[in-house]
Amino acid sequence: MKTSSTRSRSKGGSGGRKAFRPLFRPLRDERGAQAIEFVGIIPLFLLMVLVVVQFALVGITAVVAKQAAMEGARAAMVADGAGPYYEEAVRNTAGSYSIREISRSESGEYVTVRVVLESPMVTGSLFGSGWAVPISTQVTVMKEKANE
Image: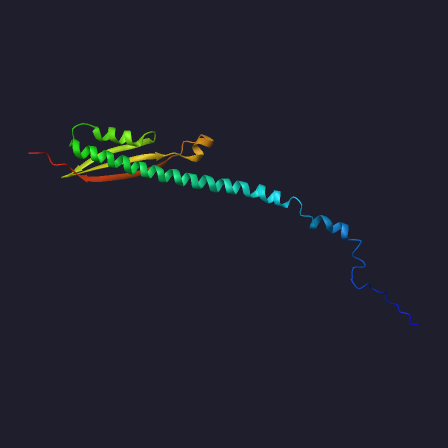
């Protein structure tokens, strides 16, 4: 019989590791990880939604400003300087948007109407801030010739 001074090991090689398994079990336990990831992603997702909504509001304001300037230029083209009809046309078209500036200039046979609207802010309604994005546009048209 052969005696050996070395200890025999099992084939799996896990002889001494069984005692440490309970210590490493919490490190492998991933229950609740999805909930923590979800809670971490929610603010980023909401911020992204707010940014998209803000860009949409600015885009819509730009379209309304261009249309208001076009209506004002059309009224100024026909009125030929007789009264502030162009301002009324701009105010009617702008609706509930805050108007920062309405101006009119003439150069020979052309008339230019410039409109500056304030775009509503998503954060303004949430936090009560007075921030506004000015959206400026102008339209130049040829004056209508008087009938002779």
